[in-house]
Amino acid sequence: MNLLDAMNWRYAVKAFDPEKTVADEKIEHLLKVAHLAPTSMGQQPFVILWVKNPEVRKQLVPHSYGQEKVATSSHLLVFCAKTNLNDASVDAFMQHAASVSGQPVSTYDGFSGMVKGFLGMMTEEMKLGWASRQAYLAMGSLLTAAAIEQVDSCPMEGFMPSAYDEVLGLKEKNLTAICAISLGYRSADDATQHYPKIRLPYEAIIQTV
Ligand SMILES: Cc1cc2nc3c(=O)[nH]c(=O)nc-3n(C[C@H](O)[C@H](O)[C@H](O)COP(=O)(O)O)c2cc1C
Image (cartoon, rainbow, N blue to C red; front, side, top):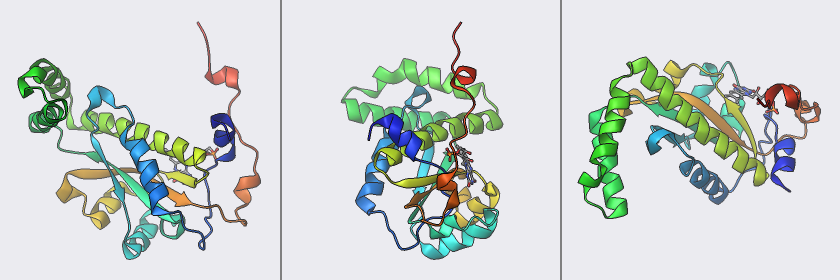
């Protein structure tokens, strides 16, 4: 299946088949794709939380406008933005870059100053918006990869972030929940799969000047 066919095949699954499980290796493959997603200044200011504990997943359902798939899909991933973006986090990133490249950390002084300057101009709210946008890029990459692998998915932001933060203990980790993906295989009873794909006309979205 080519990429365009895969994007037509995928849809936001409303009901997953509770009997079908995605192999963990396949999920890891999808996560590796998300890990490689491009981000602004390469900072990857997010964490993707693989929620493995079924009890915790059940606790999330009432905070997800009753979306049962949070608990019943094969896998659940929660994308979280970092809330402690500051000079120290930039320094840690540059240390990491130096260790990967084998260059002295001073090689990155100019870049470090640029990233610190960029973050320094932002309010906490702006930083959260910036970090969230990077998380969404990773989410999009993972959704596309899932389609190619014929793994069903549903992206979700229909939940209460503050409640997710509480249940998942995110505040202590300097994280906050942004969006989530349920992964699994579609239920034969999910009528949504038969709905036509509704998109605005191609020309309304893709324009030229
Ligand atoms: C960021 C984002 C959040 C979404 N949140 C939800 C959600 O909470 N629950 C849900 O059932 N679908 C959710 N959707 C699915 C969209 O409604 C769906 O992708 C859109 O209607 C297009 O339909 P399709 O993906 O089936 O082609 C979300 C999609 C995105 C991209």
